Image: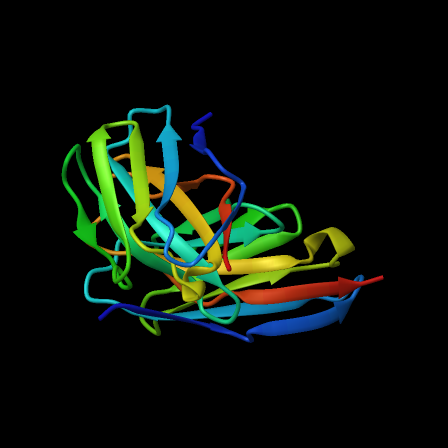
Length: 110
Length: 112
């Protein structure tokens, strides 16, 4: 059974800190790994990773995949209160369905 | 932009009532999904459909059924709601061969 494990489950930091969120996975057929950000409503897409070692970047957020060690990290530099959210990692395998981790709840205090 | 619309944002129902949650997408996606999201448990797949009239059980299908009579619409049905079905329900859709799932805004169901 495919599995996605995120750590930590929750994290509280101060504005300006840098955070690293972890996602490890066990899958039978790998197609892609995705990161989503969820505030009060629906998850919104952040990154899709398919190849090892290639960093994806968007502003202060970046993510990278290690297919050998079966994990991905999401980095957020110079955090702001608007980064407070639940960050979801999901794996997509041979079918169209995504398997999600439990999420990391990030709280950024002013 | 793909739009996934869930008809009810907030619902309050009584134990034993039949509940319909509707989801409509406007981008001709073949695949549609229903997840529920609970604190500490993340998103768990209830059912998904890869074509009209086709459905497959996800990880937690018990107590739920679905209907996909038209490509754009995927309904989640709780035949007899129970308090442990109080949750946030998220609908999503995706093109076959694509990677990025698009979510609706969610339906928060409370069963009293």
